[in-house]
Image (cartoon, rainbow, N blue to C red; front, side):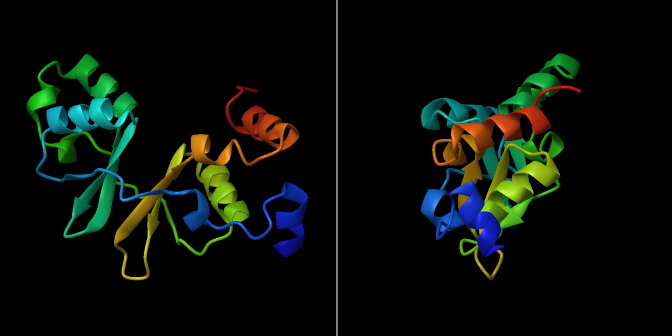
Length: 149
């Protein structure tokens, strides 16, 4: 993997180097409206959903928009009814190349960073990684993952 890290220009960088630490979160009992207020106040598009300090889901602004199209009263519902339950995580010590690989292979825009006890310590999105990647590599990633075949 070290050889690959060098070819990506990511040698020595870890998830901890690029993650947003202590992201704002909601509990499974929080309302969708509470999450929307976090989107607005924190200028973000995703909120990790925690139960006893551990991530059990993630809610994105897209999830909210799609749920409102189907259920106009969804804003008052608990986030647990709208969130994605699949949680994609990495460790703070994972290489940045590994983070990019997880984002790419899992086809997600964000991953949660958890400590060895499974507690949330940060979040990483493509927007956090993109400034570090070469233009050529970022172009390849966009082409492979975001452009329809």
